[in-house]
Image (cartoon, rainbow, N blue to C red; front, side, top):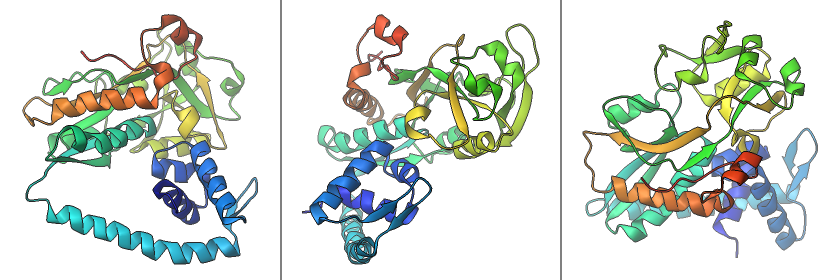
Length: 322
């Protein structure tokens, strides 16, 4: 029998024809997508995709399987949606937003776990973008967000850190800094850092695009972007650089971009946040579930182990509840 994740990996890759984009779509690693496809091909007994260093294409057998499986999958999804719709009168919905692949993994797994812990609630997961994340929270489109810190707005409650990661500098692969084992804050004077469109100094995440180094050297402003994928495209085009978390080396590898460890800055923490004025009884139970989800997804990074953190053995460190 075809497993759900195998089916979604196959259908996703058949549409995207790109392992990285399929992984982002499913909120898993590229390696996991490759494993699922290979497992499915072993069960079928023949290749479903033709792979080269430059392209991914469906084989004739893959085309036939896609044409036969897709309608059935869509019908299953539609049937499930109808079932969900029929229970909306008795089930409350918690709307959770996330930004970044790792936060997406945590949010989706917590969303799957939550109804078992809090009967009568379901979770709706939505990806948010750099330019509108906090506005979507304030406008009531989502109830809770899993975002990068710091967030100091007085109307927002910051929950416990669910994971923490080293900072990296994403630079064009042909840039001189790409050949370095690490870079410092002073090296930022040699790049143009992208900016989020319309973000004033001191706003959320403005520390990711400072205008001066610690010694006062000016840092050139790069192109303005609205989404993280736009930022990566700017870097790949050779016209800017961006400070990112270490998760990008797992989820967002692509030609034209090099990720170099950035020293001299604190780790990039991510935590659930919500409005002080929003008193949903599901928020704090969901935060506890998100912490549990983070530990399940990143078991090697959980627990207090300063030596491991300093040695870089773990790319995400899960915090204990506050």
